[in-house]
Length: 293
Ligand code: GLU
Image 1 (cartoon, rainbow, N blue to C red):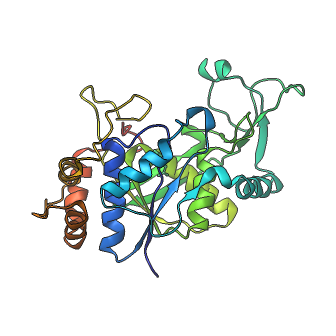
Image 2: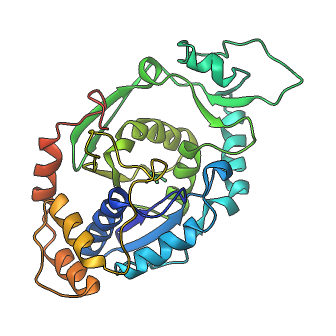
Image 3: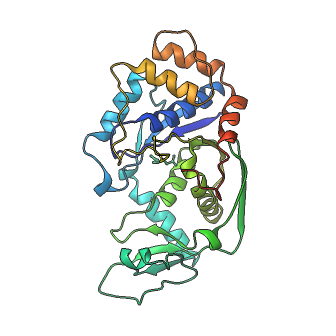
């Protein structure tokens, strides 16, 4: 089976070092397996989107020598597919409407188990949650080793369709990973604890479960995850080599002596060292329980 990997940025700002690491890690892994690498734009959340960010991210990736092997998928055009998956879950009787306001959720009783904790309100559109079983979902992560999470105790029933009518990231990612035939998901360790939710959704929807390789997370000087919303400094696409080399070092890889991004990447893919990447991941001792951010 051909390896199929993906990089799935959210267009909430320019590419910063943390997202460059995810792009480079997923690209190297795909190329080291002679596989396909696809970019999927996760433009699912209009208020968080920054106009022009999607194009900016694609241009920056190109300047760093990475272009999607297949047409870029835009989640904003895939509502019909998420709605079909939602209907399927509803037919399985494992979703329920939830009228909790954001304030109620933040007041401490956020974990839902089986039902909404607010009274129903026919005058307002609800969010929709997936009812989760009292079962432990386990998987073996190629970066961080064995992982296990009891969904009911840790995350509870989670939102799959939001009040505004948009489908949630967890559902959209699962539907699209299956649609694109992704065989291994390579992404930042901040999503390690989303993986059991996604595996559970795959089981319910009858979709295959890909392999997983979570990458160490780039943190800022205060130990927080770099994120576009915090305006982490964008990488400089007019001078890509320093950030590209820094990303390789961050992933535990050797820096090839080449002088163009494309040549650096292709040599780094040929020499891709999964054991060195795992060594970096393991020094971070990050599991679902210990919080990866
Ligand atoms: N869109 C997510 C992000 O930018 C990544 C989601 C994923 O790789 O599953 O952090």
